[in-house]
Image (cartoon, rainbow, N blue to C red):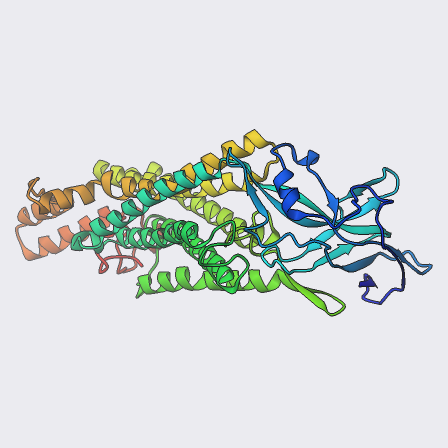
Length: 502
């Protein structure tokens, strides 16, 4: 069955010749192809040397008409031999390499006398009874060729083991981060701690879903969630959503630093955590929905239809690597998040560097927090940026990038724990003091305030001293609004919600 149309949508007449015997063409055999035997005879080697066999009738199509407008052909091709289910079509070699029998649309090149894979093939690899649709833009002879394609170069098992171990350790570290931050009331009042908890929780969920995929989804389609199914689509969309949530919490952390140190507001923004949560958990919902429906279509030739999706990969429940939805709805938000945080961090560091009045202890505290946030941001972004370049065709480079990608992304939770807990003196001092392993030390700013109060002789003097102290401590105050009453404190992190500027 053949359909032809011009780019404008107008139907186009075609002349069709069907060859009952394909002996005139290369890669043809006199009998019906035997998929089981072909799978058994396949060998490990270069993809260009793989065996191919014609697995359908050869159809020659000539579009009629005098105009030279571009046109498209849709051909419904029924394979002579069924390659079987995904599990049945895969052969695993002793070195771990896996090859899968696949049907692919080819056109015959009369100049070289060979078949070329220059047509788009649309069929469901996970449906053993799926027919094949060929979408082409030129006149010639067409056929479906069956051939073993390499789907696993043999080192994916070691990569899976590596990612499983690191992700499991990272999830434990993320859980410990929440355990050490959430129960600590003095720390939990700080805005930075609240943001760190939310970021750690979202990263924990995203890592858990990524790790759980190895249990629920199998490359041979023998898992609980079947490849290409509705459940697989929902799982991919959920993973996509959670990683976008992680990226947004990164940006919120940068915004918090910027508002606390650089920008001065004259009013208090109430319920800021509620608004941040609505932004980070609500805004990304629309992206997976748009990505799926905008890049999923039904291809129809005659009475036969196949759903074609550029949103989800065929061998896993995640975004299709290298596809347009991946670039638009995943890579672009990641880059924007990294660029936004980079701008915020540069502005904050510039303010700290240019300030002459900030105390040494306060400067060191802020710098430590910035280093932690930058470290987590860089680690998170670098891993995904490396993943983008894994499409490089050079085999050795691709393998090296894959291991780097796994190492960086699977270690995120470990680094979060190190930055937010182990290397955070506020957190370590709190728990050491709580367990009686360290004597509680009074806050330096509190000591200064107490000394100032003690040295005052009268109530009027106390009021004046307190006003002077407040004026001095606000080292990042906007000069244009210096005489205006404010209800915030620009020190970062804020010691409580009551004196926070957001």
